[in-house]
Image 1 (tube, helix red, strand yellow):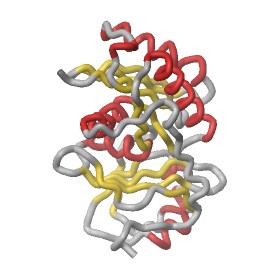
Image 2 (tube, helix red, strand yellow):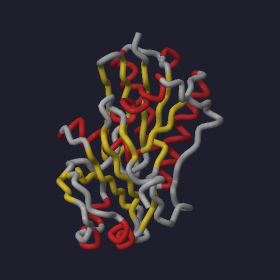
Image 3 (spheres, one colour):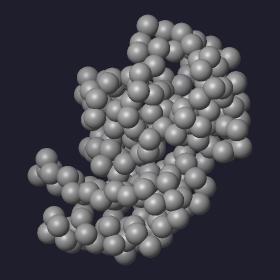
Image 4 (spheres, one colour):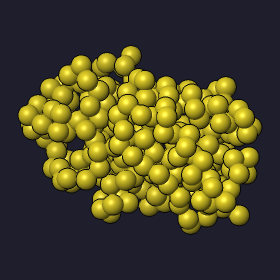
Length: 233
């Protein structure tokens, strides 16, 4: 029997909830920069009711672990932990950058995504991903928070065409115009819970869950230097 995965995300201006049951997905999504705390729980109730599923019947609770707005990430993980505690559910944290990469594939069929979220303070949250044959995404660069000018200096040209996702591209259009990548519009601004649920399934099948107490956010603010994966120096 396929796992029932409840996912939620409040890490950006977008607020979303999704429940996957087999090949069905029930979801709610709304751009609401200041309404996350009042909207997220009603959204949870709505998708559970629509699917005819009780919270304690869910197999795992997935959440957008960041990066994103400090307040938004905290709201999301706090509510997710509260739900998990109450129903004794395991949890899975999913990268919001990877979720946007998955959204570019879901919407456009693209297999390489360059994701940049506006991190304010003249920086972006950055990550690049390539889709593997099994549907998982390989992280090409370490996720980081970085100034656009520094990003331009460090990213090298390659043979791929990259779907550009996230709010960072518009926020720093001039600064990022010198990036040595072939880019195409990915039509994705924010992470969505349905993509978080999709990615969480891989981790659930591997047994990579945590307890509510062990679950933690990823802010990236303390990672201010550019870092590459081994072999990519």
